[in-house]
Length: 426
Image (cartoon, rainbow, N blue to C red):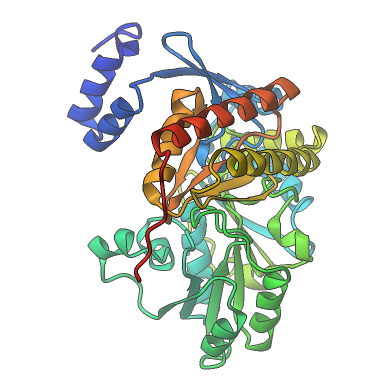
């Protein structure tokens, strides 16, 4: 077995990835410069060569930044006392975490099933829907809800679904933002449907629906007796400048999904948070839906730390303020540097997307950002959008660095594509 220092060598690590893990991941990492990340703090990643890279990626995990002191303290305390429980006895940290979580979710949500990943939270929601008699599932085109078999049935992208079909039956996809299309589906199956929707489609390319959309979905679900599931795995816990995207329109879903930031960027944890009525079907049989690591003490400590950090550091308001500032700066930069490249910049809080008419330009910007020490993400359901999800703990100098490097990256794209034109069919 190789020692720690040997494993800091990029070629050695890439060889191990190719031999024992993912060849595709190794190839992608090599293409992006072969960096080896070994340390993180706040908004920054440190590589094995000592280089500092700004983390505006992480798929929405890092609202509290890396290794926030409140989260680390909670997890370290639990690690040194009782990290994993028997699941036979009561456990106090789980009780504390659930109470803290209920203190920040929309009123009327009172029960929770904890899991490890966002897709597991989606699976729990599907099972709760079926237990409640809702066998017709409705999701939105461009939505992303995970890649396990049930969740994948709701993630409406052919490239992900095709190799695994047949998936769950009785699943319908309707256009995002189109309430009449949703109504037409629900009126054919009153009392038999469950609808899953995101307040903003992150993986769909930071698609922001028309104002009032979420409350309209709530109204039509109530009218036709459909269960409303709001997937806030990426958008919740302050990312959009509200505790939850649902809060912006005063919507109370029947099930709220949380994840990513819920573990404070220290341990993975997710949750399906429900009304008493929806959860009651599990009260009758406590082993009907279980998971070995559900509500493990160390993950519950992370939840306590994450919620404490977001609340005490006022990160929700900070995300709204910084998101507005960055979105406007990015708009000005792209308009000035890429006036003929048909770009659009969209943002809600610290979920920001830069869209191009040509996916090759999105890939070009992504690569240019990395070469300028900024990690971003491409969008899994849109090849046209580069997505930035920086942490709300950014300092003023962090913001200046991000804006400066974004502008340098945009200049690179402009220099590489000086005569770009959008070609359309006649």
